Length: 464
Picture 1 (cartoon, rainbow, N blue to C red):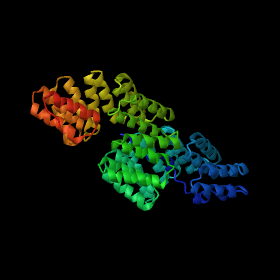
Picture 2: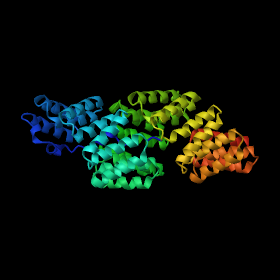
Picture 3: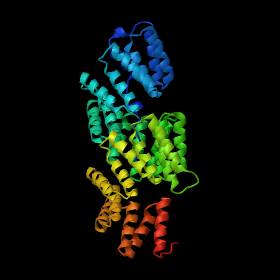
Picture 4: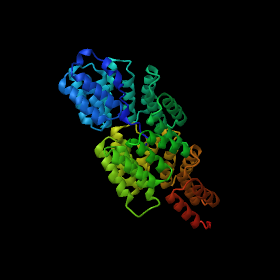
């Protein structure tokens, strides 16, 4: 699910040292230039608060210095003050409505605050002014990514690469969408290219780690997460992304610790709260010492206060509600996610499981069919539909879907569990035992292991 997200703060790549040449020299009037230049130096050194102070001094001395507003806006983006960034871009555009940098910088702020329609409008306006401005394509790719339109995001990232083949973040942007579409080897190739162009590009390491993680190369994934943190130990997203890696590897306490670190660095990072929520939900399977479901819901609530259109937060909270048997609340969250993005096919599989909880098997089957139609190579919806078919005593269809799920993913423990139960109902006991034993072989998930062991014990199988 969630995701190693490409941090939006990096997408507006303003080459500070060159900006003075992008607008007429009449904007630079003494003594403002010295403060402006000092702001650029601070920015290049990642001293964003100092840069803001310097740009503010430049603006005080020359309120018409448009570039100072743009650069201060980008510094505000870097420290999470997005409303102030938007205000500065508004001012810059009042001075000169043709400043493409102001549009893409404001688009970055809109993206960070979930205002995707406004971000898209700004990117389109920038491209109307300058159709060959690679950064506008890159920011629009980011917007499409946030809307779940990964093919569009890949297309815009590719266009940015065509215009600027040395733009490392364009490769990272495309890699991120490749990760979402399951094209992990292409993602790795793009990250390798980004790293060759820009060695300190932590987003390349984070997204390559994501691809390694999804393809079972855990040691390589962890090495890349660690490299990203080594390069930028104060970057909250690096810890948040490593937390997701730890969750996938079953190291839930380490994941929670990394999310705590990310939140201590940036309390306004929605991703950190959602990743911690996932760690809580996974930990719940083996540890009942706390109400981890309640903690997960609280974290999702915080993430949604920070970004009301954060799809992953709705998905995660819906899962928490399902675990808590609050199926109607889960459906409300799924419906809200689909209002935000009708193309978000993953949510249909989640909503289907909520419908199963309510024993509304027809609606569950319909949702699974939509998810399968959108991505026939994604195994989980076949298993979910099999459960719904089994609920309607449509055993042949259920068995067909389980077989298809396992054809696509022969390590999908849930599908072995579902098929094993179908075999029990058909009195095909030897096949049922084989499937329950396969669950023990392919997963270390405490809850699934416990269920499989109980099923085996009910069939008279003695476990070591």
